[in-house]
Length: 541
Ligand SMILES: NC(=O)c1ccc[n+]([C@@H]2O[C@H](COP(=O)([O-])OP(=O)(O)OC[C@H]3O[C@@H](n4cnc5c(N)ncnc54)[C@H](O)[C@@H]3O)[C@@H](O)[C@H]2O)c1
Image (tube, rainbow, N blue to C red; front, side):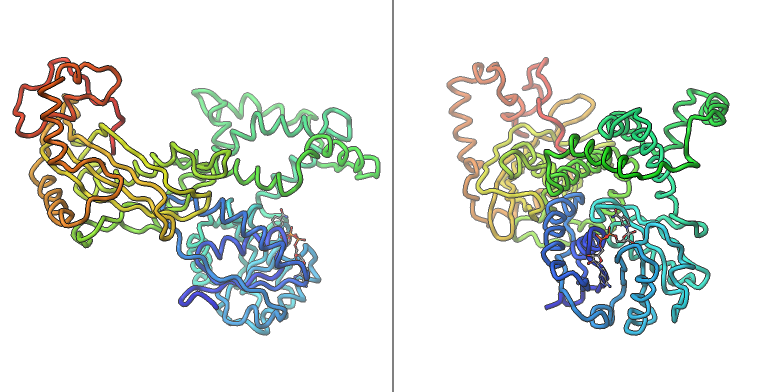
């Protein structure tokens, strides 16, 4: 049964590219109908969607919508009927594509967008003889479609502004980046560039200058890394030194006239050259199956993309913007019920958070709990602006329990119970859930600090008030299983420890700074050792 209220996409041709489109739409909450003449299509697409489930949702730092329903249809008309977006991804043959558009347009709504994944045809060629030419556009994605954001869009004169706007918003809604071409051209932008490199690479093999592995090394150890984060022009701007692009063009411009390149020529793909390339490729990568390589590629891409996300640069900046669109504005404390633990996180486990055991690795639990702490602190008013004004919380103590496994792609939610808000100290207890399974808990002791003096300091009244509101409501909640002793038990134990071994506790090496944990509002000023270090832990927010 379709997910009620979900939007519907139709995929015509579910091979390498159509399968990737199906996965992206479905994981962004769309119901997806697929029509493919291959009787084995469901198995093949199932494998793509499974891989995408592990890789794609974890690119986001917020929870994606519930996955849409994927269904397979023998009848093309049934597949496209009522669909909002129809993506054609059949083999690159113009006659076949024309046949498919005729069948699609006979059954789809006039408002539906018909995108073609074509690598090279222009919209004017695709729409020859079509009933409604403006409805057919090029929407050229990159493999794997569920991870790479770029979709080149080529429209025709009949596309119309309203449809162009819907193309833009729809692709953004599914986390893609539409790059609109200014005019149609064979093979669009990216494939023109790729073809240039591809031709040179074939010549280098054909001329016996390099084998396939050496050419791949020349790309992946060098300029390929630069391209992934800055592209071509921004990279060359830097290469020009302080004088930038003008200097670069002056310095390297003349070389363009030298006969370095064989771009205008294509080597004959003789049996001998095909055999050379195929056997070199086998020697280079034959130890891996295609499925192995796809998994390795996905994991590498996720790491690169998440790395760029942390840097808020290139494709990472797109992903951060997509997070803001999908996640929306976070709820404030006043809009929340305080009668239970507060929701402080919902996301999927990223592929690069899993370890050799195939499940989420230890330090990523701390990352997820740290993010939940940040969210809790933002709720009480300790957000980026507050920290910029000179006060924050430092984490002084953490206790994590790992209760059950979670794998890459699994959706986790986190909630937070306030156990103590006393003077400068706040004790919180996070629970991490996968569906209804409790998979981990974390208890943190936080200390409010003045960032100028790096010392514990009382929080301001508004922050104390918010903490008090939550504390009052959470006082009715049962003490969570696995939490440390309650505050009154702690106070008694603390008093006992003070009487017996105060100095030893203070100077014991390697423990959380006792001055920090033991000081309360009632301690009054002047109880810190003058040279007391700031808490060792990183700022909580
Ligand atoms: N492979 C890539 O890297 C790549 C990248 C971007 C764009 N493209 C473009 O995407 C399109 C598809 O390429 P692909 O690599 O996915 O090819 P593919 O061969 O992997 O998939 C094509 C699919 O279409 C199905 N099909 C064939 N005839 C059909 C019909 N009459 N009705 C329904 N389904 C039919 C096939 O069974 C197959 O599953 C091409 O236009 C190609 O240029 C490919």
